[in-house]
Amino acid sequence: MAYEVVNGTLIPIKEKGQIKKIPLDSIYYRNLTEDYALVINSFKNKILIVDASCIRNNMLEISEEMEELLVTPTRYPDSFSVDNLYDNQKILNAYNSIYISFAITYSCNLRCSYCFQQQYKSLVRKPITLEELEETLAQISILISDNPKLNISFGLFGGEPLLPQNEPIIDRIFQYCVEHKIKIDITTNGIFLPFFAKKLIIHRGIISGIAITVNTLPENYEEAVKITKVANNTKKLLKITQVLLDFGLTIDVGTNFDRTNIDNLINL
Image (cartoon, rainbow, N blue to C red; front, side, top):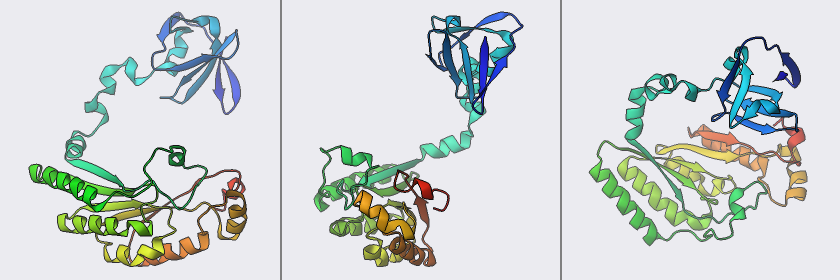
């Protein structure tokens, strides 16, 4: 007996045809009980519950009418070729592009519970030095010189890249981007956007986007801080965001949910 799981409901599958053996190399499965196994074809978003005894040596014995539910691209390599799935011109263009992310420090003014980087105590918290940065930029200059058609873009990441103590490093990176006509994006918690606002506005021509995080509604900020101890001041963050938008910068807004704000998901 086999079932398909549809919207949480088990729908019996009528098996009438011949029995076939289907390889499970690209299909996830695990035993739920001694009698039943879970089979998931993520390529087609199909979930089945099957008789566990039908799975042997990574093969599933199943009736032929169910075979279509378990087809994956790797079953038919010709239909999963680069020529069929991708635009060759876009692939060629991608070979001429490179994205360089500067994690100029892993230090941060927040200790957000969802931040994976705070779990790694060995990460260097101090910013890179100007000397180290110049060595890196020198290597990038060689790359540019040797590959004049290469499209290079930068990213500022961390930790928190927009810490005030990082200002000399950011100034030098901005200068380099202006000199070489390189676009740069910035991922930030947004707290020090007011400190860097003037520089960001002046350099808006090279800034492709600023990614910020808004985790609470303005009216819930004080309550969130009591629980998390750290959080963006949403009201201030939205005010500086509006200023940057008015000057033509692109702002990408993300969020994170935990027990402190999940009830406000829809409103947020």
